[in-house]
Image 1 (tube, rainbow, N blue to C red):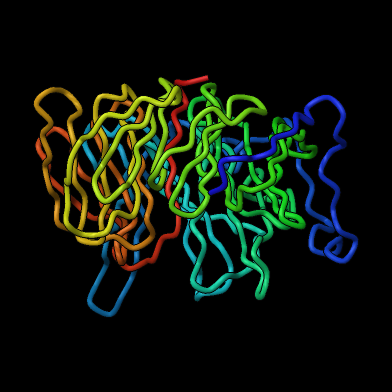
Image 2 (cartoon, helix red, strand yellow):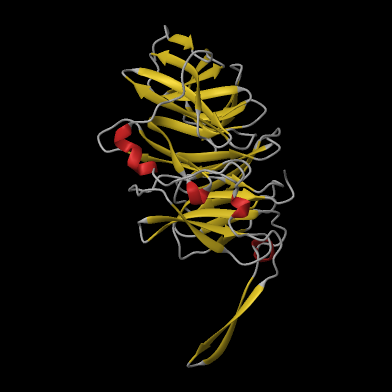
Length: 361
């Protein structure tokens, strides 16, 4: 990374990110209603557990489908899970705390291998990026699951705000110039935050503390339109306190102001993803071998859980008790208190997870 980065503040004068006419047909018919959320996809916040009767030659079999809060005792949230149906269409599984799960189709194209699906902190909106063959950037889709639409083209990286819902940031690259954008609300218009020459990379995390743009083996931290810190390593996650989990061969904590805390080598296997607990006191670190629950209190304690992951993604329940990640098949749910593990829907392959809570605003 060159030290003489040129950064221009374009917040006040730049127009919204334009769309290309050549891709206009991709978005035709996809409407985003600002008043809709995932909570309006036909999910009752507190339905009764349902019982269905299946007749077969062996007799009558009664099948009871419970809510996830009954299957996983004490689970405080509803579960959102994106999966590929026959390798083609994207399906969203909605499993309330009480009541049977249901599925919805999501109008997003196909990528192979499947690109991860990310949900905002409220579990109301999703985003995913589809690569374009032969191009550096991809097509960013986001919005209400049943009406996800194209937000931008030439996207090199994106991320949901780490503490506020409905806020999405992303980077684009054109003629060697990286542009940083923020879109909010109905995700229909984007505001240009900054432009930089000499940074060839993509956004990986952001919050009230600023923005993290990954550029090769380095990460550049922005505050507004200014680069404040350039550090070595790969950003795995961020917390609203301004700390970022970074992979630099070992696990580091990078403070948005530039401070570094060494956590240590929690695993010899390559790190795939990490997630801060809601209170920021722990990190769920996902490697190719499984999950490590890392307490950040002194002394640092790591508890390994051996269940190999599929897509590199980690999600905490809202109360910080459970950690979830996609397995090679199914969803792995780990009790962060005692390390016990169980598997949900083991017949399916999942590409993204999220949680939602009806009791939260």
